[in-house]
Structure formats: C-alpha cells, structure tokens
Length: 418
Image (cartoon, rainbow, N blue to C red; front, side, top):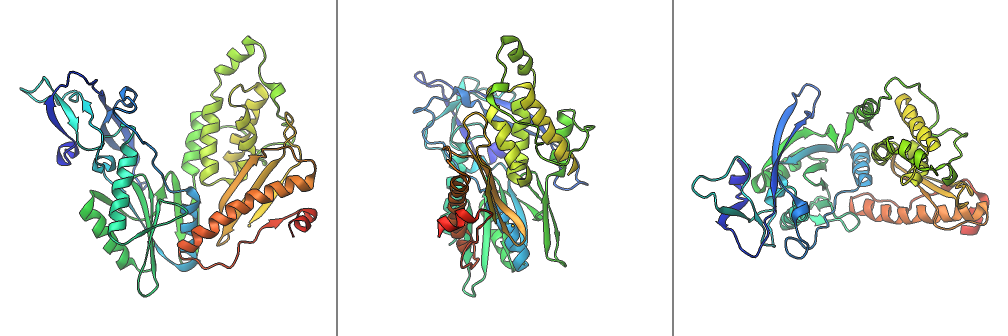
C-alpha cells in the first residue's frame, strides 16, 4: 500500500546496459511501545544493497543520527524546566526520500504486474535497503524543518530548534525515523505535530516512554526522570544463557589482568574460542554502555581490545560484566599504565546535568604517559574537548551556562593546568 501510495517506482522496459538491483520481502515481529500493546507483525520490501555498484547506483551514503548525549541532555532539560516531551514516528520514512541516481530493480516477488512481466521497476523514491536511502531521507526531512523556520544545531545536526518571540524554545531530535519533541507549551508541540503529519505519514506516540530501547519513566511531582534498559539487558542475559548467573558487585574484578599474552596461540585454542560469541556479547554490552550504563564503560574499553583474537580469560571477563549487569557528577580520572601490553593509561570522564550523567567515556590513551600526572593531564584534555562540545550544544538548546566545571582528583595535574 505504501509503495504504491508514494509512488516508489514506475515500470519501464529492461535496459540492456544495466544490471538490475534485486529485492526481497523481510518479515519481522515488533513489540508494542507499551506493555499492554500486542505484538505486531510487519513485512517490508527491501533492496539487496550488495548488488549496487558504486558510482552507478549510488555515490554519497553518509547519514547522521542524533547523539545519545543529546537525547539525555534533552531529558535533563525537560526535568529542570518542566517541559513536555512527546514522541513521534515516521511511517516508512525512507520512501519519502528522492533518488538522484537512476536505479532499475526487478519487480517484487508476488507482485509482478499481470501483462507486464517483462518490465522492470525504475525507482523514483528511495527504498529500504538501498545504500543511499538513509541519506536521502535525512536530506528530505532537513529541508522541511528549515522550510518551517527551524534551525539546525551546529553541534548535532539532528537537533532542530525554534525560538518563539516570547523566548520560549521548542526542540526536535531525530534518530532516523524516531523523534522526540520538547517544549514547555504543549499546544506548540501539537502545532508542530500537525505540520509534520501534513508533510509526512506520521504516528503520534504521545508522551515519550521508550526510545532506542531506552525506557523513560518520569515523576513530574518530584521533578525526576529515569532512563533504563532493564528489558534489553534481560534479553541479552537470556540470549547468552546467563539469566541464572550469580550476581557480582563490580564491573570488572581486580584479578582480571587482561593482556594480549592471554590470546590463543595454537590453532586448537583458536578453534575453541571461535565457537564463543565474544564479539556478539561485547557488542550487546557496548550498546547498553552507550545508552544508559556509564558504570561499565571502563570494563567494556578493556574487553573490546581483544575482539580479534579473544582468549578464555577475556571471555571470563565478559561473562563477569554480564553477571554485574544482572544485579545492578562532571568527573575525570585516569589509571597509570594499566594496559599490560603497551603500558598505556586509560582515560575516563563523566559529565552530569540535573543530577544525572549525560555524557561519559572510557578509552585507552593514544600515547604512553611517563607519569601519573601526565596520564591525568591527557585524560583532562579529552574531557575538555567534550566539555567544549557540550557547551556549544547546551547553548543552542537554550541553556545558559557560564562554564563547565571539571573535577579531577590529581592536585599536580590541576597545578599544571593553571
């Protein structure tokens, strides 16, 4: 229905000098936004992107999405200023994008037009699966937002804002086809929703309760908001048969002195570890860390260094992190020469707003520090870069702040910075 509604293609004779892009139907189950919502069954026609040829079927393909930090900052702002937070979803978003390239595709299975079996589809709109579809959708949405007098944030190009004459600000954050809208005046949110619904096929999800797997709970009487991934983490534990594991109290125990020396050296050891879903588990944990769990950032930074050739000790450390997740202010810090392979230090920082963390990171430093003070100073430099970006972001999102305070536990480093 949506394919014909847009319309996505027109039937033309098959060109002799062009190779067709294939397509297939993809079926999936999708959970409802609320617990009481029934499971939905969806089907989608997707192009086989691997059959596209660069320079012929596509050129530029980069497409931005809103940063998770921006989402957390918006939620913190809404808590501080008692803003309404509404959520919308674009139905079949990619079908709204216009294609620049000429792409020919075989007619979809089961929908070959009677009497025109020899014709092929010449795509007019972007289709799910095409390499350039996310980019074309973003450009289409960006054009519309600028047309209705919204401004694109310089520090996150998926954050849009509009300042009214009375000084009130309305914000919209876009992650592919999911969006959050925040404003103190709900009627102005409704006006924006009407404009969006007039331009695109939208689904109004009401007050924000879940985005990108993050569950949002809010208590406006106490001015508090919580984001969690309890269901996601439970699914990860069940997926890797860790739901009955014993809970531990630390993300990574002190006895895990991981190094490259523990990587498999014999072919037999490598074959054993190939059966272990190491990269899969680390990827799942990494998403939890990026979204809601800064407390495992350092542990994930360590275990992700051995993705190419993990050993048994590395796998034990990953399972330890899973056990920790089962049970469970702007600061900057660093260890000294904690990496046993290259003696490099690990930087770590956390930035908070409205009493909760909004940005965090743990990373191996690019150079070998010669002292604890130098390691702390390198960490401070990384945190400062993030602070500069955050300062610009919050200023364009309507928050007035004189400075970002960095708290460091090294007196020598503080003296050196002055």
